[in-house]
Structure formats: C-alpha cells, structure tokens
Amino acid sequence: MVTVPQILSLKFFKRAERMDWMKAALQDPEAERYQGWDKSRKRYDKGRRVTIVMGCYVVVIAITGANSADFITAYVADSAGRSGQLPTIEKIRKGPKWK
Image 1: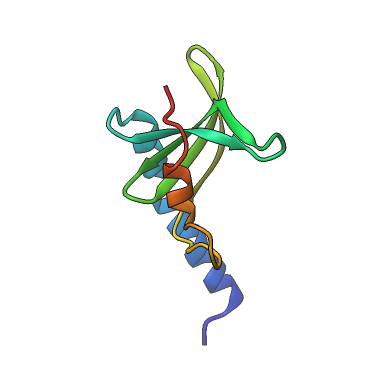
Image 2: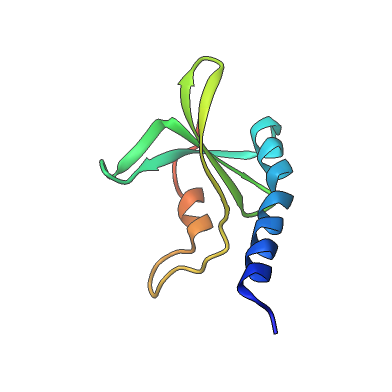
C-alpha cells in the first residue's frame, strides 16, 4: 500500500526532474514562444511569454525589463479539453507568437 508521504515525495521528485526543462525552455532559440493570456482582461499580453519545449512542457514568464523577467509558472500541458473545448496545449498554440 502506498502512503500519502510516498505519493507526495514521488510528485516532488517528478517536479524536480523538470527543473532542467525550465532552463531549456528559457535558453532554447528553437522553442515555441507565444504571448500569454491575461485572464482578467480577456486578451493576450505581450508582457508574458509562454514557451513550449519537449512537446508539452510549458514555462510562463513575465517580462520586467530588457534583460529580466519573473517566473510565473511551469507545467506539463497534458490535459484534454473539456467537452467541446481544445486541449490546453492547442489553446496555447492558437495564440499569437511572441516576438
């Protein structure tokens, strides 16, 4: 039987494995880059960059200056869309490219 602490440690181990993926996403000149979505304003935000690497790993940063940014989040976009909706990764890819 698997205990809650074992499940949590496995979850954190998986997350730790992906730390290098964030670096790859931020440094890879060939990575897919899109503008972020501002949920409160319901529009795309040129100040947020969404980067996709490894097929479905997403890293979101907020640009704060010419050579600086704040980390927002990173996740595996593997969820299927709800009935009648696109999967998360496809929603991102339908957005405008980040320049």
